[in-house]
Length: 243
Image (tube, rainbow, N blue to C red; front, side, top):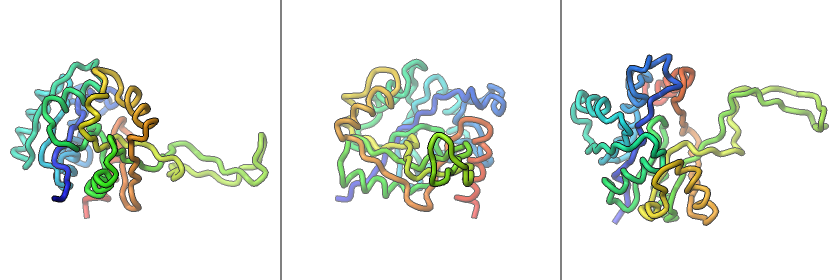
């Protein structure tokens, strides 16, 4: 029998404080519009295209506006559940409660709700099922927002600068993009609150239980945390889908 992913848990409880100039405090972060649609629309559409049927939204205290948005859009063809959690529970507590209450699948997607990508999730799933780790973590090259100075061959404490690169992708430095595939065995290790990245992932990595999956050529990712990233994400989405 072919293994496939059918369920995803999304952390969507953010208030978007760094987007206050865009939201004016009026809408939760997942409902901030990018390329004419809320971030949540793009996340759900991407998951649906990749075969996901069941969505658990870990909403913190944002359940009502998110539910109203989902209902106003009609039936998006997804089975959506809502998992409120205390705001101080962190990513660990939010994931733990949502998984305990709503997820029975042996393997499932877990992700931050402000990540946008055109990656083929099914290819990542194939690697996960083949290797059977506790976590498979999607990775992309570091996109450095600063000027990278290239030095000549005599590099030392003082060296001539030969060129600059701005907005450069540093292929040798892979970073987590906040999209994971979890196996249910992760549940016993997730803390009740705090950061899952700080409190669990380091320990799992030291035990060899995290598989890194690098996005292939042509697949990209961006996040939405400030007004500049809204503009970047808008351009990315247009390149990915407006063809």
